[in-house]
Image 1 (cartoon, one colour):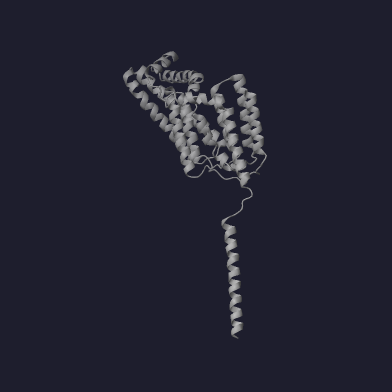
Image 2 (image 1 turned 30 degrees about the horizontal axis):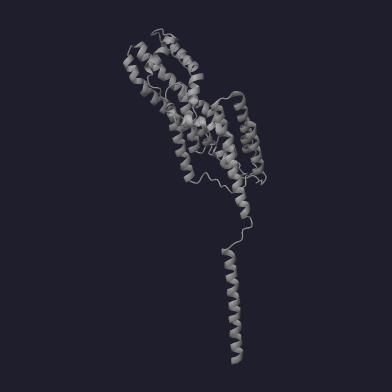
Length: 347
C-alpha cells in the first residue's frame, strides 16, 4: 500500500510538471507571437510615404503661391481664417474623429479615386493652358482630399468634406469676388436703393452718386461689409455645417443659396440706411459712424440665421449601410506609377 501510494504520488507530480510545462509553452507562445506579415507592414508603410512624397512633388509649384498668401500682410484675413480652421481641425483630431495609419492598405473607393486622379489631370491642364494659381491650389486641395479618402472609411470621408472645403475656402476667393463680381453687385445694389428712395418721394439720387458716397465713407475694408461678406459668410456656413454634422445634399445647397440671399439683403439694408442718413438727411458724419456697426451687426444677424438653418433644416448625418470597400494591395503601386507619370508629364 505504501508503494502504491508512493507510485501514485510520483505520477501526480509528473502530470503536474507536464501540465505546468504545457502552460509555460502556451504563455511563451502568447507573449512572443510570430507575425509573418511584419515585413509587408513596413513595405506598405514605405510605399505610402513614397506616395505622399511624390504627391507633394507633383504639386510643389503650388506651395510658392501658398507662401505668398499665408505670409504677406495683404492676406491677413485669409491667415486668420486658416488659423480658425486649423483650430477646428485640431479639435476634431483630439476627439478621435480623424485617424490615418501609414501601414494600412488603401481600399478601392471609386469616388475618392476619381477625385484624386481627375483633379490631378485637371491640375496638369490648368498649369499648361490657363496658369491661374488659385485654380491650381483649388485642385490641389480637392485632389489631396480624394487621395486621403482611399485610407478613410467612405462615411468618414463624406462627413469630412466640409473640412476640405474650409481649407480650400481660406484661399483669397474674396479678392477675386471683389474684382469680378464686386462692381456688378454694387451697381445692382445702388440701383435698388435709388429706386427705393425715389419711390418714397424724398429725393432723386443717381447710381453714380450712391457709389461715390459709399466709397467715401468706407474707409476701412471689412470682410463683414460689401461683396466680401459672401466669402466670409460661406466660410462660417460651411464651418457650422461641419460642427453640426450635417450632410451636403440638395437641401444644403438650397439653404446655402438662401443664406447668400440673406447676406445680400443685409448689405442692401446697410447701403440704403447709409444713403438715407448721409445723402438724404445730410448727416454725413453720422453715416460714417454707422458704417462699421451696421456691417458688423448685419453680418452677425446673417450668421445667426445661417446657424439656425444648420440646426433645423438639415437631417442629421446618418451612417450609410455600406461603410467599407475592399482593400487592394495593387492600388498603391498603381498610384505610385500614376503620380510618377503625371510628374513626368508636368516636367
